[in-house]
Image 1: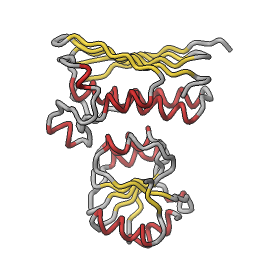
Image 2: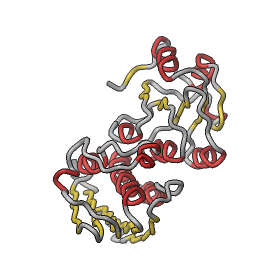
Image 3: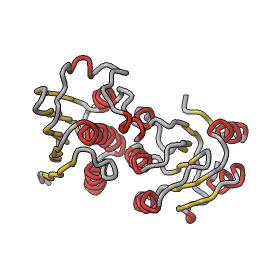
Length: 114
Length: 144
């Protein structure tokens, strides 16, 4: 699924990575626990999370995750957006709960990693 | 060829806003030197877990990064409370993390086990009350 479709389905707001609207993710992983994100070995997954801090961006950077959706109306700080830009990570915010965010994307064909 | 790169980064205990800076620098060097991407990911995930551990638990520390044609070595040394029982700390789910650490998305007792999973060789030494030394070694060829 392309970034622009994720934006449409989730009525999301893109914070950085506007030049990557055609970037495609096949799979997603949802967690507020970065320790769990760091144990998954798939590349290029979409991270759906309610944890909005610098470590979310660092975790994505180390895990080769290029795309993050912040659910339940969590806001990224300017510092987080700067760091995401450095690593070419697309950031989006959406107001839906983690459950609804996952449900909508699953329904539209995004696959789980396990 | 035959070049050896050595870099050293200092890590401040408790400074979560900067946790990951050293690992990020290491990732940039590994990328630049053309290291295999799967090895880069395992290396920086292990390094980052270790860096977060220093920030979360220790007072101060340093990370030494060495790269040559055959190996990647990352040594994480800290001055801190140390680990009372390394065997326990290697078990998934065992944690001594504070709520501040948990708020950052860590502290689930997954750090050392995940470092072990990702590293080709992992050595942990600790002296309670003084500090901890962790060495991560990766083989550039014929690793896992």
